[in-house]
Amino acid sequence: MTQLISYEKFTNIQNAQAGLTRLFTNAEKSASFYRVLKNDKPLGVLLPEKIWRSFVEDLEALSSPNYRSRIAKARRQKKTFSATYIKKELGL
Image 1 (cartoon, rainbow, N blue to C red):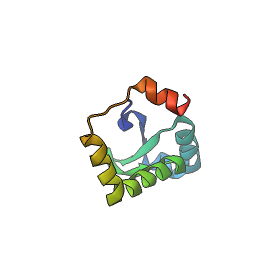
Image 2: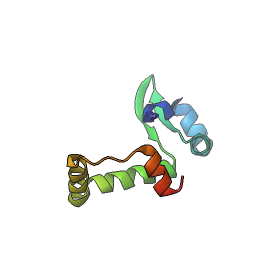
Image 3: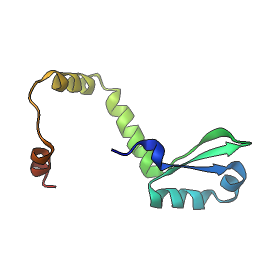
């Protein structure tokens, strides 16, 4: 599994101000995001819309007590499924 940090790129505030559309386009194409720096200190993060929507979806799911209780219940169960079985069920 790839960690989120491996998709991180860096840019300085001047480049971000001069080429914001280009940065978003590049980030979308590479499925990455940009940490914006000023004097080597982080100011913020530029996320393409697709990544932002994914984060929001995950946060909304994790804020649901019902969702969290279903995860906890599944973790308590002893029954497991192999990756091969899951791929077959999903048609992958």
